[in-house]
Figure 1 (spheres, one colour):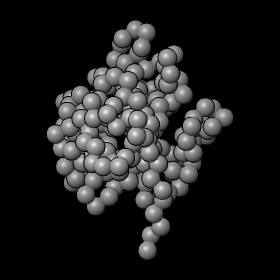
Figure 2 (cartoon, rainbow, N blue to C red; figure 1 turned 30 degrees about the vertical axis):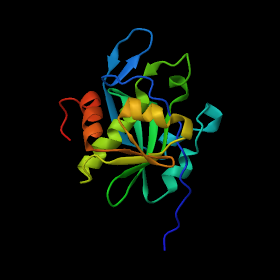
Figure 3 (tube, one colour; figure 1 turned 180 degrees about the vertical axis):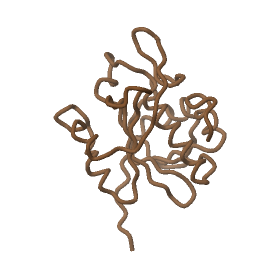
Figure 4 (tube, helix red, strand yellow; figure 1 turned 90 degrees about the vertical axis):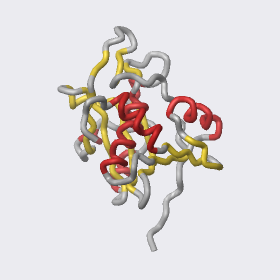
Amino acid sequence: MKKKSAKIPLDFIIDKLTNSIENIITGDSFHTDVALVSGADLKTITKKNRWVFDWKYELKQPQREVYKLTIVNNTNVIQGLISLEIEDTHVFIHLIESAPFNKGKNKVYAGVPGNLVAYACRLSFQRGHDGNVSFYSKTQLVDHYVKTLGAFHFGGRLMIINKTAALILIDKYFKNQIL
């Protein structure tokens, strides 16, 4: 029997749904890439560098896949991270975090969390799960996810993104890209 880890309620804020990520000052949009995180990537992703979560732990979990969001042609600067698990019927988001410089009122880029959630939806289609994604929300953010992501509050803290909402997010962030 496999040991189930505790489901952490997420508290990411969808600051803006953008066409990729958008520089806060200039308004310029930058296309992004999403790729699996490597051990080498994690050398700078530490609490000392103001990352909140233990991403080394996430990467060690065999059932999870950890992805990084970067700007096209600038893959050395990680804009955000997401930890996912492919379940039998959907993709489950364990953790999501914007880079420290993309948080708060002085953030550099808007759209990072939305971009990562859209990627989870896209991956769900690719893995045969019709775009279905779930995650646990902090109670005070349930309405926020309903409004910004089109998620459904399934009960308790469980949030579900279905095919319809997933297609909207994918179209926003991955327009003209093959599922």
